[in-house]
Length: 516
Image 1 (cartoon, one colour):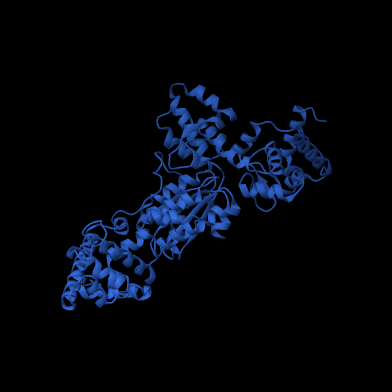
Image 2 (cartoon, one colour):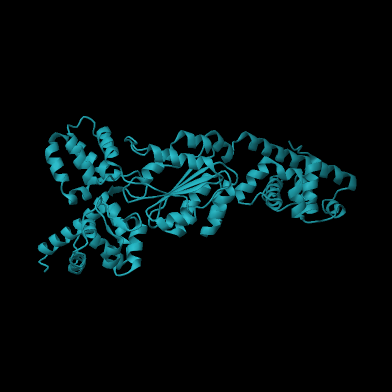
């Protein structure tokens, strides 16, 4: 511990105008000086410590003033302030100051020693107060930062293996960075929330669980500002860091060597994602997104895909959440098929059925209509992006940002049988007329690859597109392509078998739309 005495105070005042030297003195290492440095937003260098010590000593010198009036050299009460400020801050000689204060040389030296002692006492009081008041960091040690939303009040089912894999990856490497990609409504945010509450991860990252919900139009400086604030940065420092780069640098400096888990939810652009590539060697980060390109921007090849529920997982989820609702196995299978295994769709359907438990037969009948399923909604936590969410709204966000060509191709694919049916990649390219629209759909997760040569569209994506008007040109394009395909491959039983469902759907379209 630094001994705060007359000698140390004199050394600091003598180095007043030598910033580097001042920052290396013992007094620059005091806790009260470090707190002042953090409050002012200075870094932990010698210069940062010197600036903080200088500012603190100036404040303590001001406490030596007997009042707010103009200094009076003839008033003995002003001697401590004038002796120290004039000799050390203004650079006056001891003889000049002694003459200015009408003091004999011997008397001046005694008065100077008394002034230094008073300043040392004031600094001792500041240091004692700092040690009795816990810092933001020590408070964080006692109660680790936790910024994530609460767990959902429904069972976490069907993701146990993936949860274990992500946990293992986050715990395994040096500064691991992962991304999780998947369809709208497939449960990315739910999985992220579950990971935030995972006891093993919270133990491994004792310095905090940080959360940032981005969405399509994120206020990136504000989000980084909230992280900086949670890390103990002073408001003055945050306000001074106006640019995105400055805010990110502020957070990065504060994270340093802390052991923290950074969770970034619902990124839509690479720029937003990389703004949160933060943390030192002991941090880990996990980002969720619908867009595979954004996932790769953030995590390189460390990208995991979150699939929809398999039939057994969907059935288990329904059984666990519906409670005593009197549904048959056939009812459960039908609900899971209608939801396409999407957890969001299943949770919305469960909520609807529980609200209509007295007339389940009528409620099940209403759920047979895709437009009714898409309109189901539930309130969201205020810590997430949307206040109320429906499956239709979730899908609409992805569809709304498509290019016109991408939207036309999605409408065309939605006219065909959805998953588990599929179509050839060559067929999708022919319907698109170019590579870019198909690449756009695959990146957004609105179309899913099945190997290298085939792809599919999820049931709920198809339901959403079919609930909206489809242009006659899109219908004509689908009918014409598959009619020509059937004619060109009339002697190729294998190719006809692969595309039979699509050819049949195209023929039915032709009949409904009076196409030849």
